[in-house]
Length: 365
Length: 175
Image 1 (tube, rainbow over the protein chains, first blue to last red):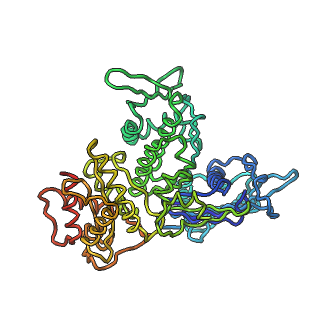
Image 2 (cartoon, chains in turn orange, cyan):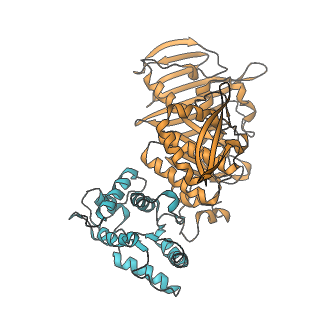
């Protein structure tokens, strides 16, 4: 699970450090850095797993405005199988015009090196932490992203597999497409490719798909089933059928209400990712969801976290979520006078007010 | 359900799943804002919830479950505090026919978790381990409580008195 994130010189993060638990709710004022936290986490995953050029992420213009240092630092700590992995990269401007380039990229296990990319050279270490290979690489992208699994780098591969199954979501029902022109192995951050991801899932996750479709009638009134119907060569439409008794009607998923689309996304995340033990961050999961549906989903999430190695980080302003989770799992993001983001655990209180009421009154500030 | 802490909620929720209830059938009241304030919070919410239950129960089959640690008091004393909270609002005490259930672990929910998992448990000792992950132990404890509270169940001799009281209380749910 993700245990710590350190970010420096990125948006409002100035030597920002945050230690996480298996269930986490992040709350705070608008502009306190909550969504930037999600973006930082997603950025680390994309750079280290996808390996696109750093310039695609416009990192240099996202440096903290009041700091004069050039380098951005991202450091992620994870505990896997009882061992502590620390992945870190430092980005600096290089060349003219300046481009974002990797000054340092490392992976350590319990303080011992597994990977180092520095001054344009990649140093690979085997599972016994012995340096095995050195070769030059383009510093304009992550070298870590290009490392393939081998017999002698199983520890590095373990970390990389975990990082590839770390997901950050900001569900956008307006972007969700009902067309699946291919199978997508992974969902997008906004779940716009739900249909293409689901097309993959029905092939490889049949048991989980059964549980998923069994859960939907409880949250979508009149729901009967989901199907992928062919509408041309290799193109499928994700269809939801609703009805009662003998009558029924079919809708492409993007014809459903925004709330219904979000509920399908939330239960897909629950049954296909969390049930597999993934680490998942969801920014404002309550958007568009009716009040009646928030607590049952939250309960189902708590249950899955209790039964699997899954980890859930929610960012929310919703009183329903805050009142249930904040006293035990809450982290308050604070930014004073537009300065650096800091974190505080939910404070002890005499219990005469609900957590959301304390926040609404500004009594945590 | 009014519970004083997340673990209390988890335990009863897991027990209710065993009885056949699902997430959509259960509504949890808010948790108190601060650790250590649970008892006060539950007593504050209890009369409001009882009033709502009585308004609702003629129309629908519903139940109210309260989960509160006895701490250093006895189970009976804690239950009396709940009755006193009703009196303060001039509400009649619960009747034997009402599906209002008082689960009162003594000394804490952690004592129940230990006992239901087969460990020797003493109601006078504190087993609280804040921050420890008890998820798996809670699931097993709820399963054991379900087994022990079934009709004609053979309750083990090591079962502590507050769990025996809770088994009687659970009868209100299934009656």
